[in-house]
Image (tube, rainbow over all chains, first blue to last red; front, side, top):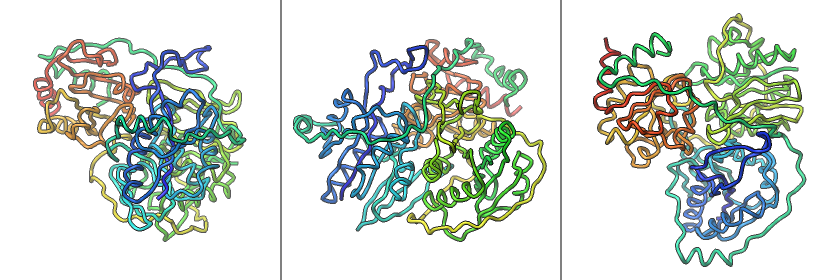
Amino acid sequence: MKVLVCMSVVPDTTTKITFTDNNTAFNKQGVQYIINPYDELAITRGLELAEANNGTVTVVHVGLADTEASIRKALSMGVNEAIRIDADPIDAQFVAEQIAAIAGGYDLILTGRESIDYNGGAVCGLLGAMLNLPSVNVVTEINYNGGTFEFVRDIDGGRETVTCAAPVVASAQKELCEPRIPNMRGIMAARTKPLQVLPATAANAATVYASYETPAPKRGVKLIDAENASELINILKNEVKVI
Amino acid sequence: MSVVIFAEIDNQQYKKSSLEAISYGKKVASDMGMSCIAVTFNTISGSDQLGTYGADKVVNIASTSEFTADNMSAAFAKACADLGAKIVVISNTYSGKSLAPRVAVSLNASLATNVISYPDTSNGFTVKRGVFSGKAFAYTNLTKDVKVLALTPNSFELNNSGSAVAVESHSVAMDSSKISIVKTEKASGKIPLTEAEIVVSGGRGMKGPENWHMIEELANLLGAATACSKPVSDMDWRPHSEHVGQTGITIKPNLYIAVGISGAIQHLAGVSSSKTIVAINKDPEAPFFKAADYGIVGDAFDVLPQLIQALKN
């Protein structure tokens, strides 16, 4: 089984998000970068499936050279080889086009449910359509049996079990697995594992980020005495009129 | 030229988020001098009422094939092309999320998800979308001729001042899907979290899953959905599908009530767009009080019974 996992590198979840250049660019100063948490699940489940089925896992990442520490982390988790497509990831459509160019010949292509920076949640479906493959969104379970994958996926207000013959694209949701933590042997081995750097293919931008803003600060909290908590219901009903 | 909206049917009725998408589509269509067409699969009775929310026309695609992301997006994209769609509007539900990217590829369109504003066409075509899991917003310019917009539910007002319209059938060859649905499980009578107008959420301050009946009782009285913080879902007190926050679900209800949740930056990211926020926590220093509109410094086990009693009266 050949598994391809698409990986994003994102600001750590504790990052305070600010912008520079008159709010036209994300302020990278002092920001710690991590593997996108959903992609970490995709890598882990990809490894488990490959290990059980005599397979290999390749990680692909679209990004500049400063993301290589995160790619090495993926290799230290047990990934066999990595590909970095050397380009600034402009938007989901650009990233999907870059990945589609190298994604032939895999049985399973995994992405995270979304990246926690731009939250597009689009690469799974984009890749499916570009490669003319079926795509299964937000999966919490992946099993494999004789060429067919079985997925459990979240749907609105419930869950659904589907099957699909390989090759297929799917996106990882929480609950898929516990992310694997690299051990010392993995970290040593990762140093010499292949990390291929490929040039980007030409692609037209579909979107342009013009500017950013952060949410307006709250006006300040109005405290209600805990002894008289029912006053809250009165306020929500008669002042805010929300219930 | 037209604005085409995907009208999603769930449990034999149109989703509220799809009605929001139709009202949104109508406004965009009027502003840009286009017609507003709602497309539905295997129509239900009452589809003519989509006209009241703004559809100038309802188009139905009938098929006996099972609908999944691959064949449904292909058929919907064909219909969009047939109907001269310049702008395609889909609600960003789980089904919407699986369709929108595939439709964008089929139509060679620009795609924006998590859209929370009407387009600004004064200089190109710009929409505001949520990024960094609720910590920020981005103004995105869609540069291709055709645009696919996936709207965040609960972001736009319903406008039902229109009148009923005719439902036309539209014939599109429907491929069989490569995906087979084996089983569907739906929690009956539960309000989907992303669409709920009121959400009651519990954190570690609830001390254990056995105390969740209070969260559920308050939610029931308010007609609210229930949610939880990350530690609570990590400890399996509650299912992961209830986890709101940066690595969970991002929601924007009209009212969010957080009980026993301290308000870590990752949690606030997922809920800060809520219109009114209430924090209940016994720690007066809890960061949530800085992000809330109303707060009660007190023990959940004292405060919740008072709220429940007040609602029952």
